[in-house]
Image 1 (cartoon, rainbow, N blue to C red):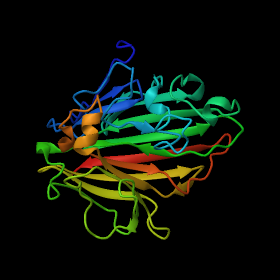
Image 2: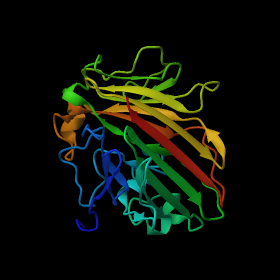
Image 3: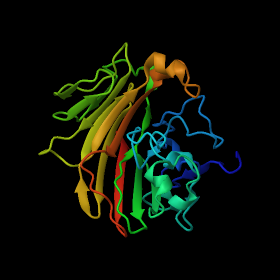
Length: 304
């Protein structure tokens, strides 16, 4: 397994920026600026041999986020299968460096379930492209319906951002701006409300697990700024479309806190101080994808 999951290391020659991608899950685990600043969190106990989804980096969630269909494993099957590099896709030019990987449903051997496992009329291909540059990276996933039967789906990029100096629980040093007016579904308290103008911070004594959905008359794309420790500010922009029609982008903020960190074998007991998940996705009001059509979802992360 280890050989099959040998990491792919990319470097943008002009700027010196670099990243690491694992074939298992098409999993981006590291992006470093030319100065060596790391933007992504990777658990020190992450399993990298292809026997389990990698804890950290950017797991890919499709065709579901969470587990609304209990017959399918949490977050779907993209993060639990080996992807193939698209022949001739690797590049390194003036603007950036990058690579594309792909996975067809017929090659997804793990984590399928529900209608994606038993309905033989379903067919899909996902192509994931990572591009890095001097100040950040862009990730794009394209989902293509290769069959004749339409299907519903969700897609999300489960970003784990590294918080420098162990300050994830320090609201002044770690917070997210940009969710003003969004509808909040708090998975921990079970409450729903409209978010105000304050930045989103991680509570000191409890897990944070919230879904932020855009107002019906608000912006379709998502634009956030993230403070992730001293002198470590990021911008995140995300957009998605189904068959050429733009779809509203939601966001999720998550940190496991102490109790959940202790319960995860592949997560360092104290590492909840070192990360914040800020995850853009198409989670609601997503039209079905018809046969022969494509959907796409893109995020751009910039180090400010």
